[in-house]
Amino acid sequence: MHYLVTADTDIGIQKSTNQDSTCIKHARTSLGEIVMAVICDGMGGLAKGELASATVVRTFSDWFHKELPFELAAPDLQVIGGKWEMMLKDLNHRILEYGRANGCSLGTTFTGILMVQDQYVVVHVGDSRVYYLGSDLCQLTEDQTVVGREVRSGRMTEEQAKKDSRRNVLLQCVGASKTIEPQLVFGEVQEGVYLLCTDGFRHEISTKEICSYLKPSHLKNQNDMHRSTQTLIRLSKKRNEKDNISAIVIKAQK
Image (cartoon, rainbow, N blue to C red; front, side):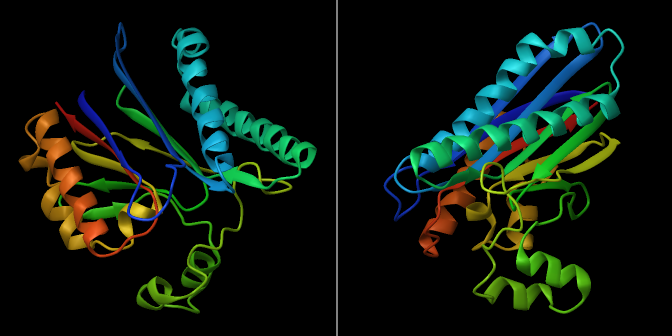
């Protein structure tokens, strides 16, 4: 499988800092092309959310360069997923202790994907998302929010969840929860588009608009990918989205 990868982020129309952090890594190896993408939505007063998200992204960037080469001798995404889970639990403890020592509250969502030998692992905490777009749009992650839990239990519809005042209330996030239990998703990479995004990207645009602008056949190169993503970001801002807005787009093709 071959990959095109882009990342776009915007501070939005209201916040004074961009607390989202993104990381994309794309390498050509003896096993074929490898992609790692991570997106984090930080939260906390002043620049604390930015500190939390940037700390997590930097840790995973370091892992890609220092640890992944050893994993590639006999790659096992189940093992790697377990290691990512432990890394996040360690980061959760470290950020939590930092907050206690400095009298502040901070944290971040985490959504990451690693693609190796046409297989992928997704590790996820919070309400950022991974979608797969082939013939239609499929959400690969579960929102770890109060309304997400209500929707999964059948006590609330998707439309009700979009309007509920608790839609941003997280059940867990890295650095602000006593314990975390990341979601792990494994699968085979299919031709199409994989989208990682923070919640600011998706609140004000529709599934139909995502499918239209990020349709795989429309994305011939990275310029097309940036242009389409930035159009969706502008739409969100025009519709008064107040949060930071970030998205990573991965096009997989043979």
